[in-house]
Amino acid sequence: MELTADHAELMQAFQQGQRTALARAISIVENRRPGFESFLHALHGRLGGAHRIGITGPPGAGKSTVSAGLTQLYRQRGERIGVIAVDPTSPYTGGALLGDRIRMNELALDEQVFIRSMASRGSLGGLAVTTKEVADVMDAFGFDRVLVETVGVGQSELDVTAAADSTVLILVPESGDSIQAMKAGLMEAADIFVINKADRTGADRIAREVQMTLHLRLGHTMRSVPAHHGVDLKRARRAAKQGAQQGDRADHRDNTGQHWEIPVLQTVAETGQGVDKLVEALDLHRDWLRNSGELSRRRRLRLAERVREAVERRLRERIWQEGPGQDLLEAALDRLEAGEETPYSVADQIVRGANGG
Ligand SMILES: Nc1nc2c(ncn2[C@@H]2O[C@H](COP(=O)(O)OP(=O)(O)OP(=O)(O)O)[C@@H](O)[C@H]2O)c(=O)[nH]1
Ligand SMILES: [Mg+2]
Image (cartoon, rainbow, N blue to C red; front, side):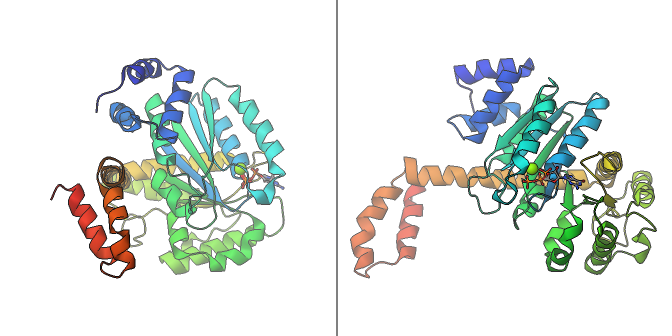
Protein backbone atom coordinates (compact mmCIF):
# COMPACT_ATOMS: atom_id res chain seq x y z
CA MET A 1 0.00 0.00 0.00
CA GLU A 2 2.86 2.32 -0.89
CA LEU A 3 2.14 5.72 -2.41
CA THR A 4 3.74 6.59 -5.71
CA ALA A 5 6.15 9.53 -5.56
CA ASP A 6 3.49 11.61 -7.26
CA HIS A 7 0.82 10.69 -4.77
CA ALA A 8 3.16 11.17 -1.84
CA GLU A 9 3.73 14.72 -2.97
CA LEU A 10 0.01 15.21 -3.42
CA MET A 11 -0.60 13.84 0.05
CA GLN A 12 1.72 16.41 1.51
CA ALA A 13 -0.11 19.28 -0.17
CA PHE A 14 -3.38 17.70 0.92
CA GLN A 15 -2.27 17.58 4.52
CA GLN A 16 -1.30 21.23 4.32
CA GLY A 17 -4.88 21.96 3.40
CA GLN A 18 -4.38 23.03 -0.20
CA ARG A 19 -7.65 23.09 -2.08
CA THR A 20 -6.06 22.17 -5.38
CA ALA A 21 -4.68 19.05 -3.72
CA LEU A 22 -8.15 18.23 -2.45
CA ALA A 23 -9.58 18.59 -5.94
CA ARG A 24 -6.90 16.33 -7.38
CA ALA A 25 -7.31 13.75 -4.64
CA ILE A 26 -11.03 13.63 -5.28
CA SER A 27 -10.46 13.09 -8.99
CA ILE A 28 -8.09 10.23 -8.34
CA VAL A 29 -10.59 8.54 -6.07
CA GLU A 30 -13.65 9.37 -8.12
CA ASN A 31 -12.14 7.97 -11.29
CA ARG A 32 -10.42 5.08 -9.55
CA ARG A 33 -7.11 6.00 -11.05
CA PRO A 34 -4.23 3.60 -10.44
CA GLY A 35 -3.11 3.88 -6.85
CA PHE A 36 -6.37 5.26 -5.52
CA GLU A 37 -6.64 2.54 -2.91
CA SER A 38 -3.19 3.31 -1.58
CA PHE A 39 -4.21 6.92 -1.38
CA LEU A 40 -7.35 6.07 0.59
CA HIS A 41 -5.25 3.79 2.75
CA ALA A 42 -2.92 6.66 3.58
CA LEU A 43 -5.88 8.92 4.41
CA HIS A 44 -7.70 6.47 6.57
CA GLY A 45 -6.23 7.58 9.88
CA ARG A 46 -7.71 11.04 9.38
CA LEU A 47 -11.28 9.88 8.99
CA GLY A 48 -14.08 10.26 11.43
CA GLY A 49 -14.14 13.97 12.15
CA ALA A 50 -16.85 14.95 9.72
CA HIS A 51 -20.56 14.63 10.23
CA ARG A 52 -21.83 13.12 6.99
CA ILE A 53 -25.28 14.28 6.07
CA GLY A 54 -27.22 12.69 3.25
CA ILE A 55 -29.87 14.86 1.60
CA THR A 56 -32.21 12.96 -0.62
CA GLY A 57 -35.68 13.28 -2.09
CA PRO A 58 -37.54 13.50 -5.37
CA PRO A 59 -36.34 15.71 -8.23
CA GLY A 60 -36.90 19.39 -7.61
CA ALA A 61 -37.91 18.97 -3.96
CA GLY A 62 -35.40 21.60 -2.94
CA LYS A 63 -32.43 19.47 -1.97
CA SER A 64 -29.90 21.96 -3.31
CA THR A 65 -31.71 24.90 -1.75
CA VAL A 66 -31.80 23.15 1.61
CA SER A 67 -28.12 22.19 1.27
CA ALA A 68 -27.23 25.78 0.51
CA GLY A 69 -29.24 26.98 3.50
CA LEU A 70 -27.59 24.44 5.78
CA THR A 71 -24.18 25.43 4.49
CA GLN A 72 -24.85 29.09 5.19
CA LEU A 73 -25.89 28.41 8.77
CA TYR A 74 -22.95 26.11 9.39
CA ARG A 75 -20.63 28.73 7.99
CA GLN A 76 -22.01 31.23 10.46
CA ARG A 77 -20.81 28.88 13.16
CA GLY A 78 -17.41 28.86 11.54
CA GLU A 79 -17.62 25.30 10.31
CA ARG A 80 -15.98 24.09 7.14
CA ILE A 81 -18.31 22.38 4.72
CA GLY A 82 -17.86 19.93 1.88
CA VAL A 83 -20.74 19.36 -0.50
CA ILE A 84 -21.09 16.45 -2.89
CA ALA A 85 -23.91 16.88 -5.38
CA VAL A 86 -24.58 13.67 -7.21
CA ASP A 87 -26.24 14.30 -10.54
CA PRO A 88 -27.23 17.72 -9.27
CA THR A 89 -29.80 18.50 -11.87
CA SER A 90 -32.23 15.92 -12.99
CA PRO A 91 -33.80 15.95 -16.43
CA TYR A 92 -37.14 16.62 -14.75
CA THR A 93 -36.18 19.98 -13.38
CA GLY A 94 -33.70 21.28 -15.88
CA GLY A 95 -34.84 24.75 -14.92
CA ALA A 96 -33.26 24.36 -11.53
CA LEU A 97 -29.82 24.43 -13.04
CA LEU A 98 -29.58 28.19 -13.09
CA GLY A 99 -30.77 28.53 -9.52
CA ASP A 100 -28.39 25.80 -8.49
CA ARG A 101 -25.51 27.55 -10.15
CA ILE A 102 -26.23 30.90 -8.57
CA ARG A 103 -26.66 29.45 -5.12
CA MET A 104 -23.66 27.20 -5.45
CA ASN A 105 -21.44 29.85 -6.99
CA GLU A 106 -22.12 32.17 -4.10
CA LEU A 107 -21.08 29.50 -1.68
CA ALA A 108 -18.20 28.36 -3.80
CA LEU A 109 -16.56 31.77 -3.38
CA ASP A 110 -16.12 30.88 0.26
CA GLU A 111 -12.72 29.33 0.85
CA GLN A 112 -14.15 27.17 3.62
CA VAL A 113 -16.73 25.56 1.37
CA PHE A 114 -15.88 22.98 -1.23
CA ILE A 115 -18.49 21.81 -3.69
CA ARG A 116 -18.07 18.86 -5.96
CA SER A 117 -20.57 17.65 -8.51
CA MET A 118 -20.49 14.04 -9.55
CA ALA A 119 -22.33 12.30 -12.34
CA SER A 120 -24.22 9.26 -11.20
CA ARG A 121 -22.74 7.38 -14.15
CA GLY A 122 -25.95 5.55 -14.74
CA SER A 123 -25.37 3.40 -11.70
CA LEU A 124 -28.83 2.03 -11.04
CA GLY A 125 -29.25 3.46 -7.62
CA GLY A 126 -28.47 6.99 -8.68
CA LEU A 127 -25.67 7.42 -6.21
CA ALA A 128 -22.30 7.40 -7.91
CA VAL A 129 -20.38 4.34 -6.88
CA THR A 130 -17.46 6.33 -5.57
CA THR A 131 -19.47 8.84 -3.53
CA LYS A 132 -18.57 7.19 -0.24
CA GLU A 133 -14.88 7.36 -1.02
CA VAL A 134 -15.13 10.99 -2.10
CA ALA A 135 -16.86 11.68 1.21
CA ASP A 136 -13.89 9.99 2.89
CA VAL A 137 -11.50 12.31 1.11
CA MET A 138 -13.47 15.35 2.26
CA ASP A 139 -13.65 13.99 5.79
CA ALA A 140 -9.91 13.49 5.81
CA PHE A 141 -9.37 17.02 4.53
CA GLY A 142 -10.92 18.28 7.73
CA PHE A 143 -14.42 19.41 6.85
CA ASP A 144 -16.79 19.55 9.79
CA ARG A 145 -19.76 18.47 7.69
CA VAL A 146 -19.95 16.67 4.41
CA LEU A 147 -23.30 17.06 2.69
CA VAL A 148 -24.21 14.50 0.07
CA GLU A 149 -27.11 15.51 -2.15
CA THR A 150 -28.64 12.80 -4.28
CA VAL A 151 -31.83 12.67 -6.29
CA GLY A 152 -34.17 10.06 -4.96
CA VAL A 153 -35.11 7.71 -7.73
CA GLY A 154 -35.71 4.58 -5.75
CA GLN A 155 -32.70 2.69 -4.54
CA SER A 156 -30.54 5.75 -4.16
CA GLU A 157 -32.17 6.86 -0.94
CA LEU A 158 -30.95 3.63 0.52
CA ASP A 159 -27.54 4.10 -1.03
CA VAL A 160 -27.18 7.50 0.51
CA THR A 161 -27.69 6.08 3.97
CA ALA A 162 -24.64 3.95 3.34
CA ALA A 163 -22.63 7.11 2.74
CA ALA A 164 -24.12 9.23 5.52
CA ASP A 165 -24.32 9.33 9.30
CA SER A 166 -27.59 11.24 9.16
CA THR A 167 -30.07 11.00 6.32
CA VAL A 168 -32.55 13.76 5.56
CA LEU A 169 -35.45 12.92 3.28
CA ILE A 170 -36.99 15.96 1.66
CA LEU A 171 -40.57 15.87 0.45
CA VAL A 172 -42.90 18.59 -0.81
CA PRO A 173 -46.63 19.13 -0.29
CA GLU A 174 -47.25 17.49 -3.65
CA SER A 175 -45.57 14.27 -2.54
CA GLY A 176 -48.80 13.11 -0.90
CA ASP A 177 -49.55 10.23 -3.21
CA SER A 178 -46.07 8.86 -3.12
CA ILE A 179 -46.08 8.50 0.64
CA GLN A 180 -48.50 5.63 0.49
CA ALA A 181 -46.33 3.98 -2.10
CA MET A 182 -43.11 4.73 -0.31
CA LYS A 183 -41.15 1.66 0.42
CA ALA A 184 -40.77 0.72 4.03
CA GLY A 185 -37.03 0.63 3.54
CA LEU A 186 -37.06 4.22 2.45
CA MET A 187 -39.04 5.36 5.45
CA GLU A 188 -36.59 3.54 7.64
CA ALA A 189 -33.64 5.05 5.87
CA ALA A 190 -34.61 8.57 6.86
CA ASP A 191 -33.47 9.99 10.18
CA ILE A 192 -35.18 13.30 9.63
CA PHE A 193 -38.08 14.21 7.35
CA VAL A 194 -38.35 17.64 5.86
CA ILE A 195 -41.45 18.92 4.13
CA ASN A 196 -39.99 21.68 2.00
CA LYS A 197 -41.97 24.31 0.10
CA ALA A 198 -44.13 24.69 3.16
CA ASP A 199 -45.22 28.00 1.66
CA ARG A 200 -47.53 25.94 -0.50
CA THR A 201 -50.79 24.50 0.69
CA GLY A 202 -50.86 20.96 1.96
CA ALA A 203 -47.63 20.99 3.95
CA ASP A 204 -49.41 20.34 7.24
CA ARG A 205 -51.39 17.55 5.71
CA ILE A 206 -48.38 15.76 4.29
CA ALA A 207 -46.47 16.23 7.54
CA ARG A 208 -49.33 14.47 9.31
CA GLU A 209 -49.38 11.74 6.70
CA VAL A 210 -45.68 11.15 7.17
CA GLN A 211 -46.18 10.96 10.91
CA MET A 212 -49.04 8.50 10.47
CA THR A 213 -47.01 6.37 8.10
CA LEU A 214 -44.03 6.41 10.43
CA HIS A 215 -46.36 5.36 13.18
CA LEU A 216 -47.79 2.48 11.17
CA ARG A 217 -44.55 1.33 9.64
CA LEU A 218 -42.19 1.81 12.48
CA GLY A 219 -44.51 1.47 15.44
CA HIS A 220 -44.14 5.02 16.61
CA THR A 221 -46.51 6.30 19.19
CA MET A 222 -49.24 8.69 18.24
CA ARG A 223 -47.80 11.10 20.73
CA SER A 224 -45.21 11.92 18.14
CA VAL A 225 -47.86 13.56 16.01
CA PRO A 226 -47.04 17.20 16.50
CA ALA A 227 -49.59 19.70 17.62
CA HIS A 228 -48.57 22.20 15.01
CA HIS A 229 -46.27 22.66 12.08
CA GLY A 230 -44.75 19.24 12.25
CA VAL A 231 -41.83 20.49 14.27
CA ASP A 232 -41.31 18.29 17.24
CA LEU A 233 -37.80 18.72 18.41
CA LYS A 234 -38.66 18.65 22.08
CA ARG A 235 -39.29 14.94 22.06
CA ALA A 236 -36.21 14.31 19.97
CA ARG A 237 -34.19 16.42 22.37
CA ARG A 238 -35.50 14.44 25.28
CA ALA A 239 -34.74 11.16 23.56
CA ALA A 240 -31.20 12.27 22.76
CA LYS A 241 -30.66 13.33 26.34
CA GLN A 242 -31.98 10.08 27.73
CA GLY A 243 -29.75 8.17 25.39
CA ALA A 244 -26.83 10.21 26.68
CA GLN A 245 -27.69 9.57 30.31
CA GLN A 246 -28.14 5.87 29.97
CA GLY A 247 -25.47 5.25 27.36
CA ASP A 248 -28.02 2.88 25.96
CA ARG A 249 -27.23 0.98 22.79
CA ALA A 250 -30.47 2.09 21.31
CA ASP A 251 -31.94 0.52 18.26
CA HIS A 252 -32.97 3.25 15.88
CA ARG A 253 -36.29 1.57 15.23
CA ASP A 254 -36.98 0.06 18.58
CA ASN A 255 -39.83 1.90 20.18
CA THR A 256 -39.28 0.16 23.49
CA GLY A 257 -35.64 1.18 23.80
CA GLN A 258 -34.02 4.57 23.63
CA HIS A 259 -34.93 5.12 20.05
CA TRP A 260 -34.56 8.12 17.81
CA GLU A 261 -37.85 9.89 17.39
CA ILE A 262 -37.84 10.87 13.74
CA PRO A 263 -38.63 14.57 13.47
CA VAL A 264 -40.89 15.78 10.68
CA LEU A 265 -39.91 19.37 9.96
CA GLN A 266 -41.26 21.97 7.61
CA THR A 267 -39.10 24.39 5.68
CA VAL A 268 -39.33 27.10 3.09
CA ALA A 269 -35.79 26.63 1.90
CA GLU A 270 -36.07 29.47 -0.55
CA THR A 271 -36.36 31.98 2.27
CA GLY A 272 -34.40 29.92 4.77
CA GLN A 273 -37.43 29.50 7.01
CA GLY A 274 -37.14 26.42 9.19
CA VAL A 275 -33.62 25.55 8.11
CA ASP A 276 -32.36 26.50 11.57
CA LYS A 277 -34.63 23.78 12.96
CA LEU A 278 -33.04 21.33 10.59
CA VAL A 279 -29.61 22.35 11.85
CA GLU A 280 -30.85 21.75 15.37
CA ALA A 281 -32.34 18.37 14.46
CA LEU A 282 -29.08 17.32 12.81
CA ASP A 283 -27.12 18.34 15.90
CA LEU A 284 -29.47 16.30 18.04
CA HIS A 285 -29.21 13.37 15.72
CA ARG A 286 -25.47 13.45 15.82
CA ASP A 287 -25.53 13.54 19.62
CA TRP A 288 -27.94 10.67 19.64
CA LEU A 289 -25.78 8.70 17.19
CA ARG A 290 -22.79 9.10 19.44
CA ASN A 291 -24.50 8.48 22.73
CA SER A 292 -26.57 5.52 21.67
CA GLY A 293 -23.76 3.61 20.02
CA GLU A 294 -25.54 3.87 16.71
CA LEU A 295 -22.73 5.90 15.16
CA SER A 296 -20.28 3.16 15.87
CA ARG A 297 -22.75 0.56 14.60
CA ARG A 298 -23.25 2.45 11.32
CA ARG A 299 -19.56 3.06 10.87
CA ARG A 300 -18.79 -0.60 11.41
CA LEU A 301 -21.35 -1.53 8.78
CA ARG A 302 -19.76 0.94 6.41
CA LEU A 303 -16.27 -0.36 7.08
CA ALA A 304 -17.36 -3.94 6.52
CA GLU A 305 -19.02 -2.93 3.28
CA ARG A 306 -15.87 -1.14 2.21
CA VAL A 307 -13.78 -4.23 2.81
CA ARG A 308 -16.20 -6.31 0.78
CA GLU A 309 -16.04 -3.86 -2.08
CA ALA A 310 -12.26 -3.80 -2.03
CA VAL A 311 -12.11 -7.58 -1.99
CA GLU A 312 -14.49 -7.80 -4.93
CA ARG A 313 -12.41 -5.29 -6.84
CA ARG A 314 -9.24 -7.26 -6.15
CA LEU A 315 -10.80 -10.54 -7.16
CA ARG A 316 -12.14 -9.08 -10.36
CA GLU A 317 -8.73 -7.67 -11.19
CA ARG A 318 -6.98 -10.85 -10.27
CA ILE A 319 -9.24 -12.92 -12.47
CA TRP A 320 -9.88 -10.73 -15.48
CA GLN A 321 -6.86 -8.47 -15.73
CA GLU A 322 -3.91 -10.16 -14.11
CA GLY A 323 -5.10 -13.74 -14.22
CA PRO A 324 -5.99 -16.21 -16.91
CA GLY A 325 -9.73 -15.59 -16.72
CA GLN A 326 -10.17 -14.08 -20.13
CA ASP A 327 -8.03 -16.74 -21.84
CA LEU A 328 -9.80 -19.56 -20.08
CA LEU A 329 -13.14 -18.09 -21.04
CA GLU A 330 -12.23 -17.74 -24.69
CA ALA A 331 -10.78 -21.22 -24.78
CA ALA A 332 -14.00 -22.61 -23.36
CA LEU A 333 -16.41 -20.90 -25.75
CA ASP A 334 -16.45 -23.74 -28.31
CA ARG A 335 -17.13 -26.33 -25.64
CA LEU A 336 -19.75 -24.05 -24.12
CA GLU A 337 -21.53 -23.65 -27.40
CA ALA A 338 -21.35 -27.36 -28.09
CA GLY A 339 -22.95 -28.01 -24.75
CA GLU A 340 -19.95 -29.87 -23.42
CA GLU A 341 -19.53 -27.33 -20.67
CA THR A 342 -21.91 -25.09 -18.81
CA PRO A 343 -21.27 -21.47 -17.78
CA TYR A 344 -21.03 -22.77 -14.23
CA SER A 345 -18.38 -25.37 -14.83
CA VAL A 346 -16.34 -22.79 -16.76
CA ALA A 347 -16.73 -20.23 -13.98
CA ASP A 348 -15.56 -22.86 -11.56
CA GLN A 349 -12.41 -23.47 -13.58
CA ILE A 350 -11.70 -19.78 -13.94
CA VAL A 351 -12.03 -19.05 -10.25
CA ARG A 352 -9.94 -22.05 -9.35
CA GLY A 353 -7.36 -21.00 -11.92
CA ALA A 354 -7.16 -17.56 -10.34
CA ASN A 355 -6.59 -19.11 -6.95
CA GLY A 356 -3.69 -21.03 -8.36
CA GLY A 357 -5.43 -24.33 -7.82
N1 LIG B 1 -42.03 27.71 -3.41
C1 LIG B 1 -40.86 27.21 -3.04
N2 LIG B 1 -39.95 26.88 -3.96
C2 LIG B 1 -38.78 26.37 -3.55
C3 LIG B 1 -38.49 26.16 -2.19
N3 LIG B 1 -37.27 25.63 -2.09
C4 LIG B 1 -36.81 25.50 -3.34
N4 LIG B 1 -37.70 25.95 -4.24
C5 LIG B 1 -37.58 25.99 -5.70
O1 LIG B 1 -37.73 24.69 -6.21
C6 LIG B 1 -36.90 24.49 -7.34
C7 LIG B 1 -36.01 23.28 -7.15
O2 LIG B 1 -35.12 23.54 -6.09
P1 LIG B 1 -33.74 22.77 -5.98
O3 LIG B 1 -33.12 23.16 -4.67
O4 LIG B 1 -32.94 22.96 -7.19
O5 LIG B 1 -34.29 21.29 -5.90
P2 LIG B 1 -33.44 19.93 -5.99
O6 LIG B 1 -34.18 18.95 -5.18
O7 LIG B 1 -32.03 20.18 -5.66
O8 LIG B 1 -33.61 19.62 -7.54
P3 LIG B 1 -32.82 18.52 -8.39
O9 LIG B 1 -31.40 18.51 -7.91
O10 LIG B 1 -32.97 19.00 -9.78
O11 LIG B 1 -33.51 17.22 -8.14
C8 LIG B 1 -36.11 25.77 -7.52
O12 LIG B 1 -36.73 26.57 -8.47
C9 LIG B 1 -36.19 26.41 -6.14
O13 LIG B 1 -36.08 27.81 -6.21
C10 LIG B 1 -39.48 26.53 -1.22
O14 LIG B 1 -39.31 26.38 -0.01
N5 LIG B 1 -40.64 27.03 -1.71
MG1 LIG C 1 -30.28 19.78 -6.75
